[in-house]
Image (tube, rainbow, N blue to C red; front, top):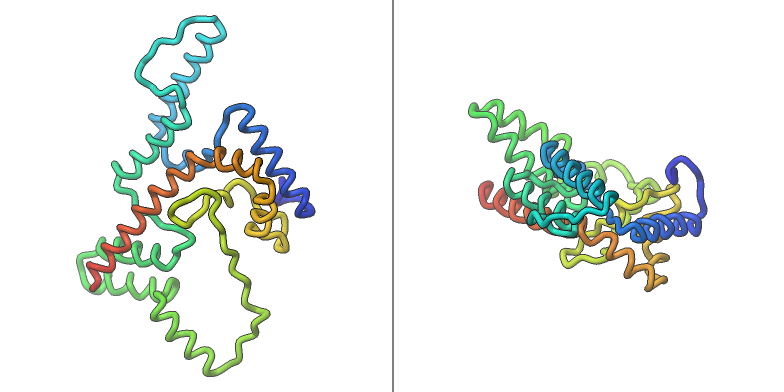
Length: 231
């Protein structure tokens, strides 16, 4: 809804606060990322369990201890982290797009045994997702023939962490920019002025942050391995 309508920055902040406060009153956490990380079988099993629990609660029955944690949000988070590791997921990070492309380049290139196909893949990546080194060469060629208009270069938005030891942030997934003039970092700065809300905000995000932190660690290790393999 925020994306479809034009709101003032104060209105955007208010919407975020209302959504987060409302969710925590229902003991809900940010968990959109789980839609990508839980298998259909896991989702089905969890839904059946929760339906059974809700039915027993409505009938005032005693809920048996079947070794599932009382905190379902934490259980689903740990299950998602398990899936990342168990299925050996290749992790890309938008904040580290160059590194992510290097990982994909190595993985997809090695899918081909013949040198020509592998070379075609590598050239494709260099054309559409160049490394920093090749991008610097291309930029030097371009700037030697023309002057860069600073106004045409979009400002990079730095996503500052809400509660992370790794230097990355899941808070931007909670809301979208209402317009090009309202940046994520600016909204976060306004939210940080309310210390009481930020405590609630961090609690709201903590399980998704756990997943992102774990995935970030996987991404770093995968990229380091690519650097070792490519010399």
